[in-house]
Image 1 (cartoon, chains in turn red, brown):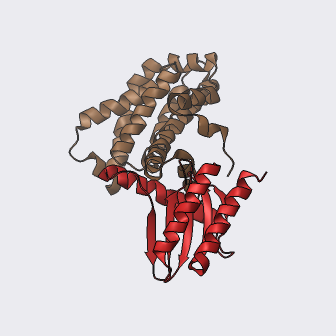
Image 2 (tube, rainbow over the protein chains, first blue to last red; image 1 turned 135 degrees about the vertical axis):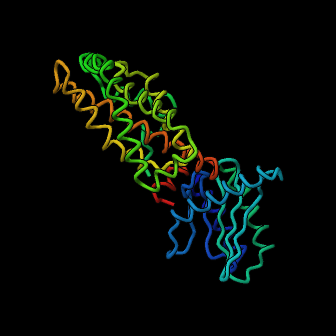
Image 3 (cartoon, rainbow over the protein chains, first blue to last red; image 1 turned 45 degrees about the vertical axis):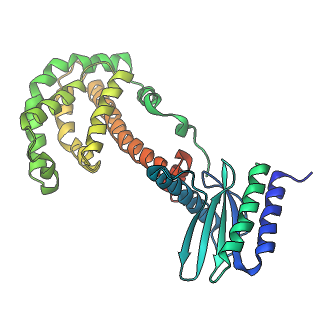
Length: 123
Length: 182
């Protein structure tokens, strides 16, 4: 039987495969910023991205709470040369996705939600 | 990043841990307590020097505008004499933590209370030198002052950590960010 890390790796690989070239990197991260599995590019410091992704999710939840608009489902940064998407994967972890410029965000979000759901069930 | 046992110590347990760490002996606490009456006598001179230094520096003088100087003199004199109270338990640490928390609330940078040890130390050491055992009393005074410094710093760290943890969603992540891992 595959370990939980192997199962998470499979979920991330499935996301990368289904989203194709739109996804530049993906990682599963604990809510306290520890990288569980990373498929980020080699020139990306996955540990730092993990901490930043967890911070983004924490701040997003704080904003949602202050505004009383419910539970945060995702947070997205759109930059000149790409996008960064973070969403919860259950209560204890999150999914971070680095998208290339011009990516089909709608399609990637659907795939990301499936991956986040899968990770939440593994953990 | 390795989780440290010290990270599991919070709130009042922090104060108890510090008291335990300083390990003041009964002889030391007795020597300090014996100086309490004399501490009240030199406290006014110490507070005069204390506030003269603060008023001479624009950035610290700013914190003294529009506040009762009589009250401040009284508070610092009380703080100084309590260094010689002779009982250094969790309740002592809690009272000192409250002072640190007030400094945090008024936005006073921690470097200022720490720098003011330059005024406090000579007065305390002069007083300890009059003890029946001057060498031991000076050592005890330095221990108590170190305890106060540690508590002051803890008040600032607790405040920063609490706010950051609230913002990002957890203390462990906050510690990770503060160490530069993020």
